[in-house]
Image 1 (cartoon, one colour):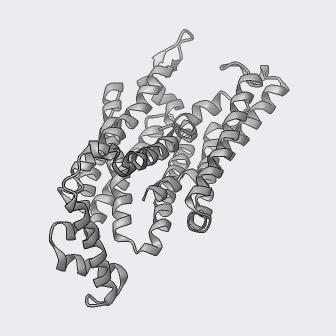
Image 2 (tube, one colour; image 1 turned 135 degrees about the vertical axis):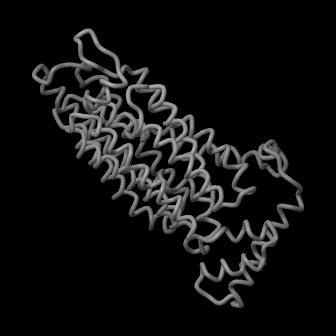
Image 3 (tube, helix red, strand yellow; image 1 turned 45 degrees about the vertical axis):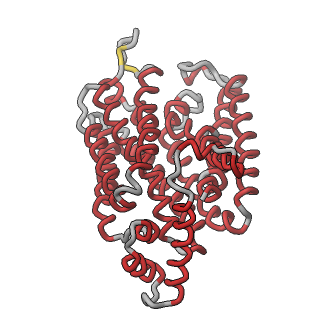
Length: 373
């Protein structure tokens, strides 16, 4: 959506008319369009907690994928109503938030121990690769004069929703969930299939016993409540706060600014470079940065990764903010009025934006989920 915000047809349909007679999207409207997705993800992430156990992992993924697809369809079919666009964003966000919680859970419960950390990184890699594809699509469609400039990149999300909707039918249910609802024989078949061994293999029995022990230990403590996550017994509240803060900081460390407002921001940087091209470069850098994380998350460790990433991203954010404040020209300054200092500042800003996104991709993108898991 970031590139759509500066597309002429999108601004004409959902923006306002400025004093110069040209359509524009005010910061308030930009914030509403982008933030409603995040609001939906918040609600969806909480809502999935009530569906993952009741309907199973597969059933929940199926349901929330359908909700996401409906939200995308609402956005794609919007003509001039910013209300319809934001409602569609919120509905799609419900699916995104829920799936962001259920899919890693499903991966962790179905993957062999040795592959769990790697699969979590692969999950993050797929997210980053999807973002990269969206940037490439916007780069390829932004020159179209009509609504296809933004409908194509928005509407193509339907394919991914439908792909997940249909693909989940070919995947097994989580063996942990099956054991939790008393389907031991079915769980054994799934474990055998996932590990490519016979049902009577020793590995299957060991895995079943291990999962059963964990489930019984949880059940012996009675049904847990939300408040128990913050219990002072056994310092459980520390574990809860630690996990929450890791995920919170992951979302607040700056990379989402580039994901949501990158094109708008780079258009005002005063470098003369195409903001769509810069955003595509950032997407490519993110993909490349996630690849070494496949190795580092296991070889280097979670703690070292998050600490290193925090330092690098803090430096990048500090340099970018100082350059933006002291060296860039005021927003809206014509290119011909930019000084050499303004242009150099814009180039430095873009360079550290790239480093920031790369550091996130290597360290803070995949590691918090792996550490919490």
